[in-house]
Image 1: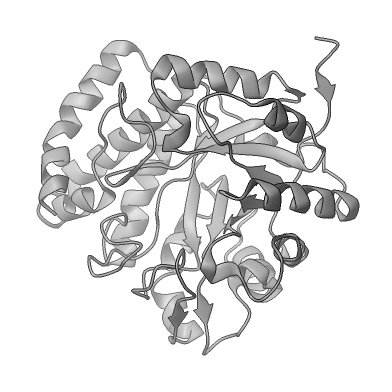
Image 2: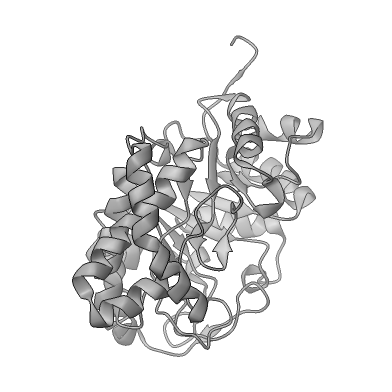
Length: 344
């Protein structure tokens, strides 16, 4: 395709307004700073429609633009009609307390099924699994996490990640270093966690330490850990280089969480937030729900950061060899957990 832009994938992930590409979005997505697209429920009508949309996105660039989605299960599942209704991760954790062997098997099944269905329509990766401590009182995490025991989170996360990998998808652990110690929703305001580093190392960071070799990527938390450092992890070389890279040994990609969230504001523009995050060690920054901010950010970081060839290669979706009859078996095994999850 001689008319396809020959551009490397840049460090910005952006979103779309609807179920098909507008002319303005086509022009925006070929900007060198843009490397990936995240889809939301507003971009989904059916399997056929979203598959066509993804094909449109990928046809704009060579190497292809990557496509991601939040398809965790429970209350955070962007694609629903025609997709299996995935249970919240907490339902798996509850089962673990009485039937650990079955729970680990079903954690693998959930990761495999989620990834297989997405790979069938062309999605490269889902931002999953959540590795935060589960807390049903939390406004943002709630039942999105497996458990409140970090060792159980690590064990169930291990099987979930392996399930994703078996269906051709890399995993993204979130939200580093841990969103489960606060009740406040960082979409709406800045949460403050008052625990010290030793407490986090012995608790929230355990899943990252145990799963570091398996995760393709990690997403940051917009939480202030005031007893450790005023700077948010998203903007902090201490958190991203010293703790995540050097201490925990993580070598994969680092995504910022959405920089339009209230918790990420910090009194500066979206473009300045993106620059700070990239200088601190994030590989990819997300700007969602504000198209003009995404365009301004693209122009700003495009002047400062040369797109790195291969930056996102590790997250490219692989071949999915899960047969239709295997999918049916996975769905049957998970159905009781779906009902359990509704009761949480």
